[in-house]
Length: 135
Image 1 (cartoon, rainbow, N blue to C red):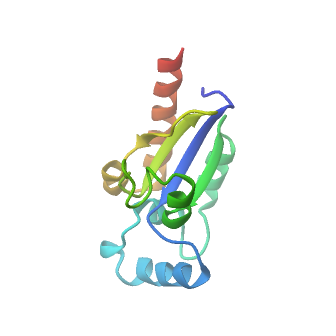
Image 2: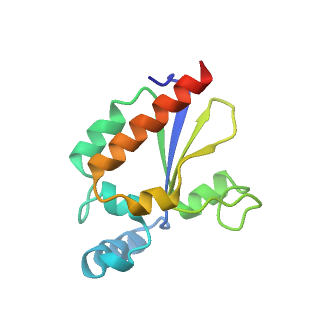
């Protein structure tokens, strides 16, 4: 079980904006094999977040923050696109309050996942590992 001062940071490999969202929705449906954001594909249907995923993250004992590629780079310039320690996207990171974010589930693991249940199990496992390591 994680502590409430833990932040789970989900970063989509997509930019913010209505036009971008529409383009991504179409891309996901028309050419899913070339869609660049496995995290989006796992957690969203055609236009909205999957209910089981939403219920899962809302039940976590952690603050969950969602970022798109562009706003992540604004808030975390060293880790964002072009940053000194650029994180491959999509990615799920964690941080304790005031601490530096660290990759919890990297892009290559997200890219290999085939469904939201696999993602939820991976998040639970990784958060349990972080919690044990911190104890």
